[in-house]
Amino acid sequence: MKLNRDSKKYESIPKPMGLVNIPSKDFKLLDRDIKLAYASGIEDFNLQITAQTLVALYKARKSLERDEQLIIKSAYRPPKLQAELWRRRVEDIKNSFPSLDEQEIISLASLYTASPEHPKFPPHMRGDALDVSLSRKDIILEMYLEPFSYDQMQFDYFENKNKEIHENRLYLRRVMQAAGFFPYDKEFWHFGLTPVWPEERT
Ligand SMILES: [Zn+2]
Image 1 (tube, protein in one colour):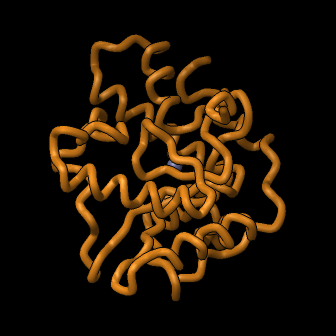
Image 2 (tube, helix red, strand yellow):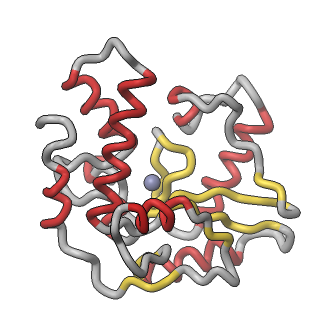
């Protein structure tokens, strides 16, 4: 696969049936994807998931304390948005790891953003995947340290390093798993009703 060349492949991936908006009255919605979508030429973009995923998301919400709120950063991604995020991921990997060759860049980038060669169905294009965070009393729970780095993305990175951060990650994971979501070990914020990679389903 050549870098930045096959992003049109996303266009052939079918759009999931029955996508619904995530209600902003019940969840805090971040606008990164909305801005990127408009910049990528997508009109009328909202953070959306399948109806079944929204049911699970409400189940997660119900298990929270009264002063806690789920924050949604990314949900369903149409092809143009997925292509833009892939392009940005590849650039970021190149800048973060300048010694990697092209194939290594693609392999590493594919762990964090679905490439056009994803063997099944890119998680955020299934409509059942979410990137989430959590706030308490309107303050976002600390789940990483600045400057953010790739090693911190791994779910268990702070185990035995920073108790509070690891506890926060564990809490978010418990909330989402109890509602039926699969976590993704390489990204503490990613959850889906189906696993990122099919072989994770054991
Ligand atoms: Zn994700």
